[in-house]
Amino acid sequence: MEGQLVRARAVRVPGSPQKKRLIADMVRGKMANEALTLLKFLPQDAAKDIAKVIKTAVANAEENFGMNGDDMMIKIITVDEAEMMKRRRFASRGRAVIRRKRSSHIKVVLVEKEGTA
Image 1 (cartoon, rainbow, N blue to C red):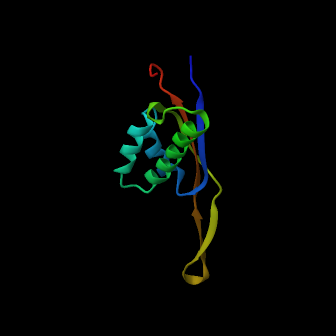
Image 2: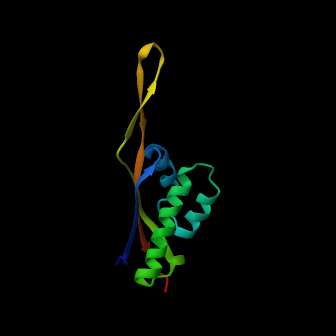
């Protein structure tokens, strides 16, 4: 039987969802503490954003549901595309080039690992 699901999400986080998904794939299915340790030593900026959402989910589990944060496992982590800001960059010969500044929605679902009590 599955335990209580704990959710956390971050919306409109600056940065490409494609780059954040590469980091999310690395931590999917791992224990939350193990994932946070791994993310701490990754050089990508996306690792900080994902670590922040995981920490929030662990804090939600401890504060709202009275669970032990050390027993939490990442069940689902998704990175979806958010709104794009479109900006102009002026180029030669009177042209303008559209720059798309991408942003992401990050969603994490934790579950308490079975067999711990």
